[in-house]
Image (tube, rainbow, N blue to C red; front, top):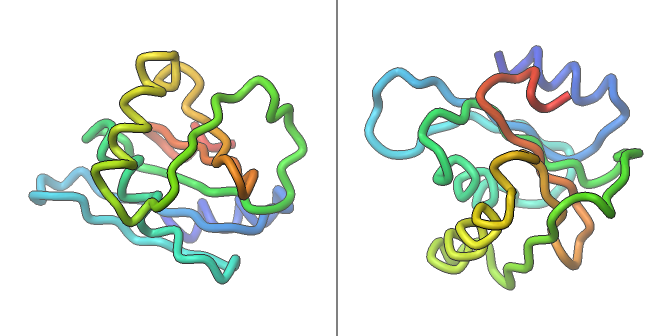
Length: 123
């Protein structure tokens, strides 16, 4: 699944990272990730998967996004490595509709994060 998602991600003209996970019943959050941004996005992927145990795909678009960022919620987390702060910010955003948009902008970097129950939710 990851290679197919990566090919679609690159065909869309994006740079950043993408991940997928299997819902095979493993305990905890386990996913595979591919990136071309030079950024360590794994903490962001992990935080997003922590929102809903049924999410199977996450992408972080660092460059190439051509949609309207103004309609997306903005998440402000100083340090995504701090799992508690990341979870609190995402939980707050969920209360304000994040679960319906399945997309948000990272304040500061302007990166767009998309996520969902299937790879098709990302594109």
